[in-house]
Image 1 (cartoon, protein in one colour):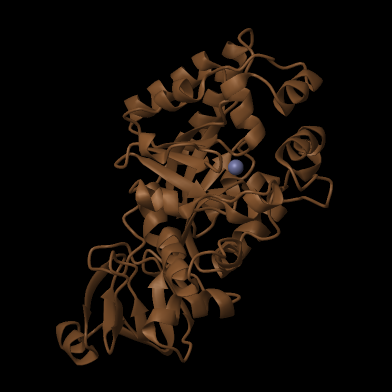
Image 2 (cartoon, rainbow, N blue to C red; image 1 turned 180 degrees about the vertical axis):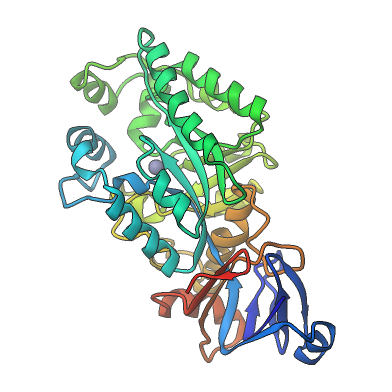
Length: 402
Ligand SMILES: [Zn+2]
């Protein structure tokens, strides 16, 4: 047992409660939150850790990240989605990271106070580095392939990578599945992946409605996607309507990533569908950002991902939240900061089905410590997001990472 004394605790519960003059007792889980003298009486042999100049908060949960694309040196085109997608297909092998790059990416994730990630795995190149790291990783093995003739080939490639993830499965290395997108995965392949997710009780994710071009393509079978797909000799008819694609995920715990061009969020299932927001990636690849108000009105759980370094300048959740504070400039600053902080902690934990993301008894002891700003409680989230470049300390499952 350990007892940690912070200056304030940002619980990230539903009311965004902030606690003062209390400590937490924890092992791999948070056991009790109470004044120090009470905890010392209950646990006289516990190790005491003094962080009385820090704010304790749940560690961040980065729900969408591509570690494999961590070697971008400027080859990729920013500004609009389709030129970017074309540049990824052209330079994909150049921006793929070797193990050293993946390790350094993981390190930057940890330094920002992140304990858990949803890692989309396209090739399996990041698995060894993730297993060896302290991170709690949900690995979304990605299915991709739009050709009807090559379904068996695409399925075989997908299953070989999924088997490799399954062989490494542990409490901190959790298999999950991904259907890349409505424009890149054949119906038969998607159905097989979803059947597997249901049979094995795995969560799923998909890129969805990331660009206006994607919406035009699915709704009207026209726009820039046609020329893009022809360029790569790919299927030049939409594989689904919007509703057809979304209904594949009925009854399945699914993270829908981006959703910038979703027309009606009320069509999602509040208990099973989660909206993953990648603010910087959306900004770099287009002009519109996700409507946080629409998501709140539909009662959906918001969570946040950095996406990969192929469409970001950083994998730090602090950088991502800082950017989001400026991107969503029509919302009052402190209200927005609290929404973002919860999305990046409790929202992410719910989305990845991890029992963390809040400072409360029985939750996993995944928490970060940040320098305590001299501010009122209602400003605390904004001040941490604005001022902190790295966490002062990080605990995952009760073990101190740094
Ligand atoms: Zn992505």
